[in-house]
Length: 407
Image (cartoon, rainbow, N blue to C red; front, side):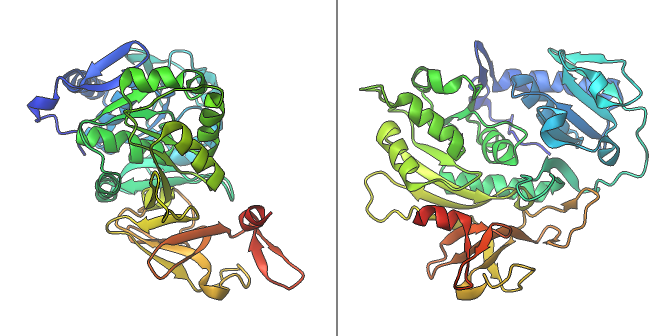
C-alpha cells in the first residue's frame, strides 16, 4: 500500500516533513524509507506481521509508518502504552518499535534485548508471539476507538477503505500539493493519522510537525514562518490557541485557508472567536475511527449569513448516513426522527480485534454511539451520545450537550 506517488519528479525536491530545525524533501523521504525497508528485510520483518509502534509525533515515526504500509506490515501506533491501555497478548505483535528513552521493562514481555533500527528508533522481537493472530488478512492499519463510552477497542482498517477516506477528504477540504498543514494532533489518533498526515502526503503537500504543548505560545511565528495553510484541531486545543492570542493586536495570518475542528462539539462562540483572530474558514468535521475516520464536513465561511453552527455538515463522497430506528436501549429518544447514527461507507472497519461486532457490518456499515438527526437537506446534527441522556419531568430525554446549549 503506497500512500505517496514518488514518481512525480517535479515534487521530489519539495519539503515533505518539517520538525523544529529539521526538514526532509520527498526525495530524501523516499531514500530513507527504502533504506529502512531493506533493514526490515534484514531483520525478517515481513508482510503480514503485526507491529506495535510506541513513538511521539516525529519524522522518524512518519518514516516508520510509510515503510510498514508499503510492505504490508500492519502497525498500531501509540505515544505510550498508558495512552491506549493495550492488551499486548491480544494484539500479538511480532515486533515492538520505540524511542531511545522508552523503558522496555514496561512491556512486561520476556525479551528485553533491543536493536537499533535507524535514527532514534529501536525495536525488540516479541518472543511470546503466537501463530493464531486475531488480525484479519485484509487489515493494513490498526487504530483505536475514542474510548468515550467504554474502554478503547483496537480497530482494523483495510486498504480500499483507507484510500477512499483519503480521497473523499481531499475533495471535501480542497487539499492540494501547495498546502502546508500544521500537525498538532497526536498521529496515533485516526483523525490525525488518516485525515491529516496520510491525506497530505498523498497529494504531495508539506507537513509541519509541532508539539501542541508549546504551540499556543509560538503560533504567530510558526504560522507565518512556514506559511501554514491549514491546522487540524480539537475544541480544547483551538480554545487554547484563541486564548493565547487575545491580548495581541495587528496579528495577521494571511496564508491560512482553514482550521478544522473534530473530536467533539465546538460551541458557536469558539468558532466566532477563532474567525475573528485567524480570519479564515472554520471547518467542522464529524467521524469515528470505525468509519475510517472522516464522515461529514461543514464549512463555516467568513462573513456568511447562512452558516449553520449546529450541524456537522453533509456526508463525504461515497458515505451515506441514516438514523437508526431501532431503540437499542436508547429509550424514547428516537422520537422526532432522532436516533443513533448509522454510517454506510466503504471505509468502515473490517472488524474489531477480538471484540464483539454487533454494531458493524464489516467494510459496509457501522452504528455509532452518537445520537442525532438529518434535516431535509441532508445536514447531520449530533445531539449527544447514547449514554448522555437524562429524564425530565415531562418524561422526555434530552442530551446533556443540548441542555448545556440551552443554559
